[in-house]
Image (tube, rainbow, N blue to C red; front, top):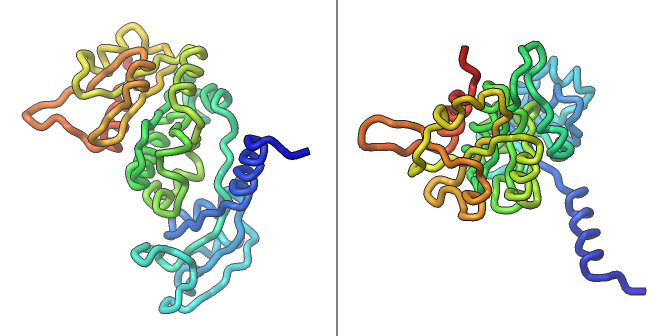
Length: 265
């Protein structure tokens, strides 16, 4: 009996996902991946200088590196990649399901506080996403969520910009962003969409609601939030600005908005 087309496509997608690998590069990204027990590591290529700098992390990982001449660095990276003599082939991280991530709450050792999540609406620049992951880790966000398509995939460039945060800060890609937003709303999250034309600021929207879990939704620079995304948000909010120029890079906007959600004494 012939399999239905959708079954064949699903099996093909699973095979492609199983075969997918990522080449990480740069000392910070490679070191943190080496030290991450959840990261499946396949191949490590280093120069002698990088090997010396990564000696402890390599020993902890149990990997046997391939040492190469700096002039003949053999990892399959883009020509402009600043690899610092270190590159590692890995499997993408599996962060589990959205609900479990959303229940994450505060970081270990911190006082209990309402969780915060960032959702990205078609933000495709890996450098922006990497910077957002760093901010998310600093401000204790549970996760950064993005759609599976039309977003920045897990790549070496993203990992290098994240400077190791990719190994610790969940970056979960979902099938449909609006569905993920609605799932968070059912869990009690207040979903705030960043929009420069909004009437309320982040702080104003959170008055009397700082005990609520909050999801911040940011769109790509230029287009901003898509209409469906805007309609799914509970409230549209803005970041106040002074002077005539009121536009922030999306990664800067994420950091400022996350800071604005922090509990006040």
